[in-house]
Image (tube, rainbow, N blue to C red):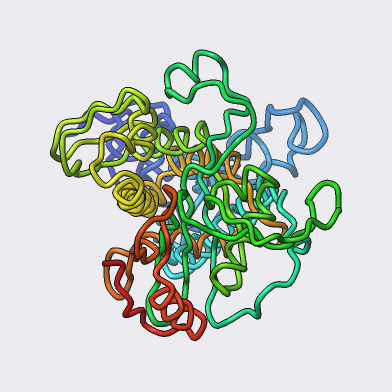
Length: 429
């Protein structure tokens, strides 16, 4: 004997209620979701022959109260079709009411989209950076004003000038950098950089070099000044009429065509060094120079902007005076170029952009100078102490009246090798 009402058995209870319940009421929806149903009954009739109940959703209209024909759109329509519990997005159900498996992600397509997006961002950033950097170049030197120029040879020749310009510096900065307060500007260092296919060559031109000032056209007045055979120090040419007369004087005394001109002042030099985070140098000897502010012990150390400027300007603390100073300047510029070109600078936008900004704001270049020319110059400066590169002073044979006299035979050979873009074999010894 069983305990079911009216002595019903499990098999004769009908199909109105779920199995496993001892109650005369239907199981709740949370339990009944596990019941697998067959095909839905015809309209107007519920399961087991029980008439379909009206829907209480909108009250009237589609799926509303009293609309028997809209039963499937009412509150329990999803329950009857298996779409309420465990529904949601992704994956439908098959004919048995079981969820269909979610399709596997298309990793190849995702990788392709990500790659295209990355390339697009890099291209846009690179183009924007190029135009930003190009707009910051100070193209103030017009080499078309230089007259009677020698023919251009193979490769590219840069005249790199460090001036003692104090323009824009405060009194405090002048004191910190030990620059003094002299008016105008003079060349503190001059270098000739040849970039070619047979090795790059950096040649320092001592500012005390004995040169002849040739006939030239004034950069501001446009007036022609006839040459008189007058000899003076090389840096006097810059003091008399600026970059164009300096280029004219170098070309006249060497016979070598200058393709580009680059100049940087005191403050700009220090700012570049600070932006890159300092430059590591191996100081060859103890140096103390009250005029430049240098105070160094021998050995490796990292120099900030102020210390770097003091190091490259040091002259009186060195036994060889200007010639030894130019060698220190070469070493430092090579180290600076190498520091700028390291991955830690190039791949770090928080260091690269400040360095570029400091450098581009500080440089004065010729009107034909482009960013690619500038980049080529820096890479060549980095390579002159390695591989096929070479750094040297202009060969000197003696002095006259305190000026350094160039060795004419060696200078002639050097110029010919540079013109023809040949490997330089000349020594400055």
